[in-house]
Image (cartoon, rainbow, N blue to C red):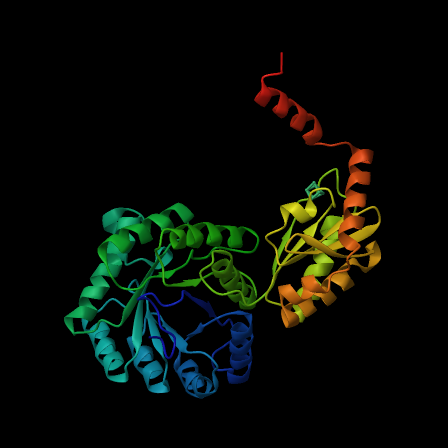
Length: 394
Ligand code: SF4
């Protein structure tokens, strides 16, 4: 447990992020903690890098909406101070708190306080003896560092542990966690360290964390982006939702990439729709499709969607066209229908469909096919398929 958040043992994968404010600035830090909570963070880590920071934690923790983990480097006494301040978890870096007796002192105090410890190995700050032995921060070196630290904790009967072996190289990060997962039963905290600015940082994090989660490795995650930490929390939460590992709480927008058939500026409509729907905070999957020819069919899995065609927007629910609106009203109509859908449910909204909408959509589809041609040559192929089946192809 990290406070009231279970980690590991089949618990939902949790999202973590870290504040960027000075911890001594209690109000600024708390306001960031609240923003992170709002963006999807279940647990927030805060640096405890000096006495003022530890004192700040004492004021922040009782007012925080989520469990707080103190990030500790170099000075084991600050871990003891953070425990005194009431943290729910400690992150210890084995690369820079290296004395066995210091680590054991912290573990005993954490056990007394009922607080968990993350053994947070980082390739950039690996124990210098291991760096020398292995030549560089290879996966085996990261895992060895973690196992060594765990031994110290277990020696004093401490088992409330989670572990991370973060690397800035995605292949090395993935390999490190795979190796670690073979060796320990403890929950794992996943992350690509120093991933950088978006979009590169997002891609690295998704590649590393997503790969491992799909292999069943990982219990809690953090995107380490050089960006507003709210972006980290949001991305972490979205990844879990897209992988089906957490329930959807926000918008999942799917949009066609657009092509020569598109009858509207799909990118512009998708951006406008995203802004409107995110502001309304609706937990549904919405599709924005560029044409009526393929749109409703291709997006039939979506809760709701809109497809453009012949100056109109064709609004559909679960692939069935329910309303036809002017192209300029597409986004407003989508927002209106999405709101009703969340309030009233699919059955009720399908029952309230405009009965002429499906016919209008079919007319527009045929008209577009006539104008643009049947790109898939479906009609022609139907005939040849029938010929082949009946042996009439000569
Ligand atoms: S939905 Fe229409 S516009 Fe969008 S990619 Fe498919 S065929 Fe092209």
